Length: 348
Image (tube, rainbow, N blue to C red; front, side, top):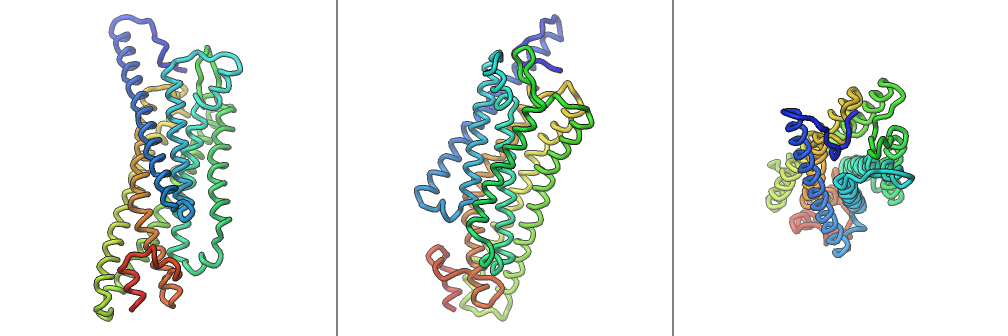
């Protein structure tokens, strides 16, 4: 079992130089992690303020919930690694609770897990509204959306906190998270379950839902671009094809960046379950966590700038067409939120 980065090993020669260099590198990366947490907090706070100021938060509840979860994750990141940088020696009941909730990263991982669950809910909700607009209009209720948001919060935090209490310990004033297991087999099984639920299932659902959406967009674009389409709709067709291209790029970027940014963290967790000398205190884990939260900051911009505007625009457009007897459509009160090109299509 390794010791905290603040506890220097008193050795001489090359080993001592290597230990000092590793500690300095780890310290720098911990500082970088705190910086990315500050940036993420500021970005999420700014987006939430914009949504509230424009009174769009009631129309995009899942997006707002995603911002709140990412905001909490960034705040927990600052709190967790701010305390780790202080190298405080844990003692008594206060030290115990700091270890069980913060220093073992239970709250941090819980917030990130809830964020992943909410991303799954967003993908499923968009899939239902685009691929099955009539069914979703009849059966998808507001209380279902709110309940799914609550489930994301509860499932994300409860599971991680319960696991953190069972597998974390304070030794000589240092908190070691997720290192105490009943057996190596139990550790490996729990780790594989964590990786499967928080990575592979997320990627598969992303690919399925957004793949179906993009296929539907392509089919609709081919219909609109056919020679039988009226000439007055040519401008609307070009606008729709441009939106389709932007959505394709956005979804590919979101899914690919998620898979790439969080894969190192999953690999490290699996290795940690098989090697007792690896812990969450190692400097390499800070580098991996930095990549994950960099994804959260960049994904925030992608979702709110492109996906929020373009996908909602497409969903409303398809819902209007479905209500008029075509394959997709939207209701009349949403005319003011649609681009002029879509209003021209309805007029025709």
